[in-house]
Length: 243
Ligand SMILES: Cc1cc2nc3c(=O)[nH]c(=O)nc-3n(C[C@H](O)[C@H](O)[C@H](O)COP(=O)(O)O)c2cc1C
Image (cartoon, rainbow, N blue to C red; front, side, top):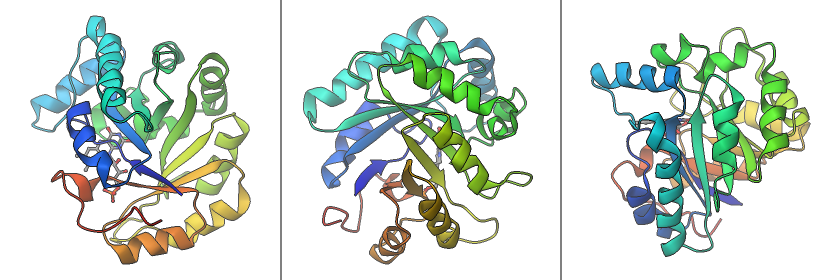
């Protein structure tokens, strides 16, 4: 079972990840980071209305990520480091995927902040006609593994079809926030269906906030799970190490 710290913009930096990795995580996700002028501009607008974001200028973001990776690897040698990123084109994502010692570059097709979606990024990526080509171009040109983080049950999209497209495009991981509108637990049924129909490694996400929900997540057949909100305090109050 692959145990992942999920990204939380404005929170999951190296200092935070170094504190929570000892709870038993195998993969630690930095970010989400904005990597080009349009996404950096969108991040700044989000900050202006009071929401947490990482804010690094274009001339610093790549060396910043490199330093953050080194800060984690220095302390936790066996842990894989992932970076969750947003950009309007593949080029900056490829540059992150080639950062020395970064294990996974994660394409953010998940963020639903209006400023990010208005420029075709985050969750809006799921509507791109060329999503498969976008992912393949990244996968074909990076030294790292590639993860694609998506949100399930987005209106107008077929999550199972998207899972197949992401697998065919050559990604290594499908990181799926299996949220269901109006429900406070992950869509366990959808996760099982996806796991039964694809061969890509599936990292299930959403509502792993207790031992009981962790068991439900594992029972869907996922290869791994990720946790975000239950870690915000910097402490995890249930055991993940035994899974
Ligand atoms: C404050 C906050 C910031 C987040 N930022 C990101 C992000 O930058 N990229 C991303 O893919 N998901 C982001 N997420 C979503 C989480 O990674 C995760 O998918 C979601 O919270 C559901 O998982 P959970 O039930 O374990 O919290 C964020 C979530 C929170 C609460």
